Image (cartoon, rainbow, N blue to C red; front, side, top):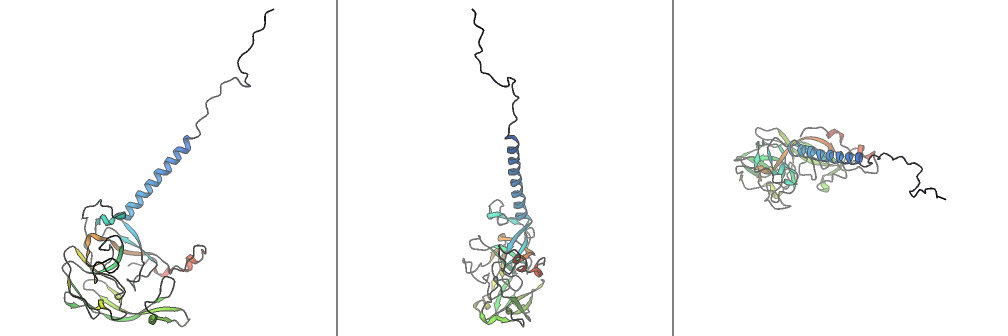
Length: 287
């Protein structure tokens, strides 16, 4: 007898070939690539904005009282004085010298890279321009040998807060409602050809009398409005002691507008304090 032929292959419930399934990794990979491109574009846009249009700056000290308080956040316009390497993040040496240079005006509130190390940003008021002579005599500013009028006005008053402590205990007082404030003697000081502004003169200090200084070409003499609590061009350029005369190449921008201000009383885990700590009356003010 002949044996029936036997099947030596493997049995399958479905012998019809299945079409190839589409790759499950194509679409997510494309989405991931698009997200990376978006991040790169975002970083470039922010970098261009900060380098050439506006840069944010926060106030870390009381050297510019009464105009600027610790906890103020402002925008500095980058175009008024032109651009240098200090206009770029980390002062990247991509711009030689200063291009599209513009001259600061006397009385401008400027942000600079502070000498001698040029690694920290300071905010001060421009007092002396190229060719001018600057001197302090008994606490009175002298420009080109002539005293600048200094008129006593109402005292400056600022509430004591986590961001504000009085310079000395003698300046701390209480309002009728019992809340503590710092009260400082304030003076109006109108610069020739510039807008008047206010300064604080708290006591007799060594910087109330300085030798005459003629500002060289391409440099600027800066001072804080809080004359007795500011390390500025009245002191030699030594880290932590002063900045001396500042090259105009170190100009970062001109302080323009207040975008936010806080008294430091906010707590991250208490969202309502984000609003109660804000100094709403300061937001949006021109500088």
